[in-house]
Image 1 (cartoon, one colour):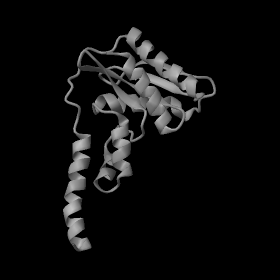
Image 2 (cartoon, one colour):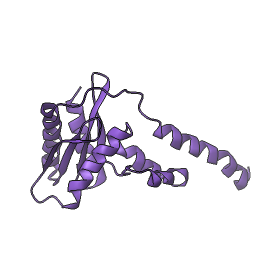
Image 3 (cartoon, one colour):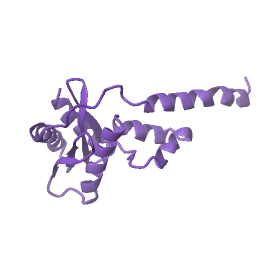
Image 4 (tube, helix red, strand yellow):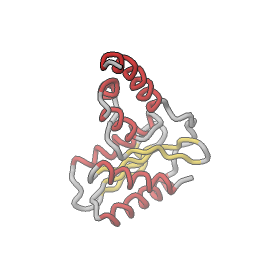
Length: 161
């Protein structure tokens, strides 16, 4: 098979995979996360950060992307303060973890279109909060590598069911 034919066959598949990966979660929005649950999710995320000795900022937003709770560990880099909030907003507004955007950009090609989406932060660490089958908000964590941010965010999100 020629390289040109192979590219012709693979390109549509790559676009399909990118679009499929970005399809919104079929989970509806529900009532916004309570302050008690926001604190619970943030505390779990920060506990995970302490286990790894990672300095983190954590933000929890409601279904409209409005900040409900925020906490920053001592000596966390200043840039992570805003980034944690933006990761949470991205996750709730687009109904998916920010890792989906990171992976799409890393894949190049059609995935680079993500960079043109207003309000989409393509860095792992933002995860929707789901309770009773509904999105109630999102958690965003920033301060270390994106995979460490994601581990902490997922730990926080897993606290709520």
